[in-house]
Image (cartoon, rainbow over all chains, first blue to last red; front, side):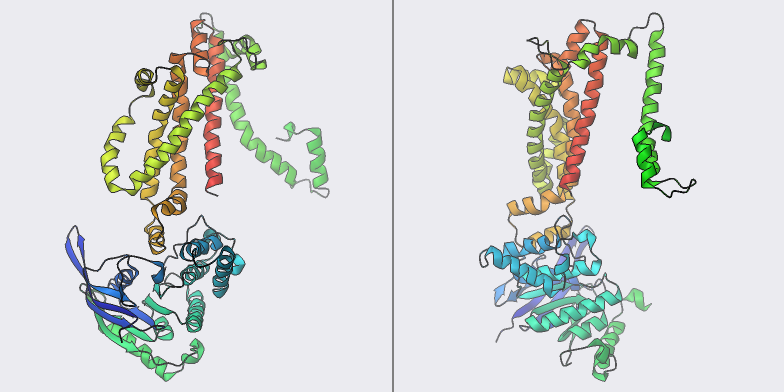
Length: 264
Length: 285
């Protein structure tokens, strides 16, 4: 059986003014339906580039991406992205930001009332329904990211792509949002691909952690299967030897693959 | 500052702060002080300017009338702006409204054309490379230089004047809109790409709102240039209009009327500028 999402021998070369730059080389990954995958690596290893290729925002130079056996060649709502800097439209209210996506994606399948209910349902999912009339400028960074997640979930994507979604948030807010995301993903069974540089985040949320070697010509160096039962609770896991084993393994990898400038 | 308060204001101030200590100023006095701090300096500046002008033009052999004489000469014009004796012998209201109508038409046209063209140039590299050099040259042509060509093309005074306004004010609108579109953050473009917005949807839902501040900068410069152009154009084409009124007054050596008209031209230009600013603030929320 072929995988739900399959990244086949993807390589990408950027043409820059200083010549060509090989960012990714021979990247292969198969993701099952409902799986939560984290991609971790040092900054500049091209992990966001992989995500952008799956999103269709970048075109691979070689190889390709198949989603349900169909080739990905352009962006689309079946691969909704939650961007690091939330990218909400500042002139629209929280409600209208989600409505922009819902009205576009579900215009043919849902009536006006159903779309309204669906927008509110997704805002409730991330507990942002109380702020539906606020503008992005009036809410905190964590709240903006919640709305970004609601907007992406509302598209009912086949794959949810998260590009360091909590990177710009403080530790407490980040923990809250991780818990919310984990709970939502378990409930809805979304297939998720998340870029991160946070070891705890990767181990806590993922079914598998994909570890990237450093660029140029970065590729997948190691894949770690995280066999922890759900529901996962961060406080209980803090003393769990299996959890700490996975954590140490990722840390060891990252330190073993420190970029030259860091190792020196 | 409390010298300028009316008796009722003083009464209100007293009622608003019944237990006010003598040293602490009440809310009302603070408000009055605030208003005074904003209105008094320009008022004093104006009085000084008028005083200097009065002094300079009081001397024998002065070529221009002092403000007191301007006021005396133009009292009827100021008090009755609505008279209409037929032809071009009308009150200042009618002259200003004729000029404003031409500006409204020419400027509306240039706003629509300018925003659309600016969107295209901002969005398409090819269109920008093709058109930008032409625009950069054309925008330096002075307004009145377009008048003979437009008179030849339209063979009528009114459409020519409107065309001159259009061609004068369209460039800053095009160029600023294009800059606004070029500065749309990549994030917003990614959102549009993921949602597969059509070009029309992208234009209406992302490009327009995202470039509103830039568009309004262009519109503000544009309305100022329109007002500059119409006064000059009307001097040449004649008919009813504030520009013609000034020219007519010059031909009759009515210096006071010219000065009054200049004051009105300035006030209307200022009002137009504020109007666009206010609309811009409303639109961008």
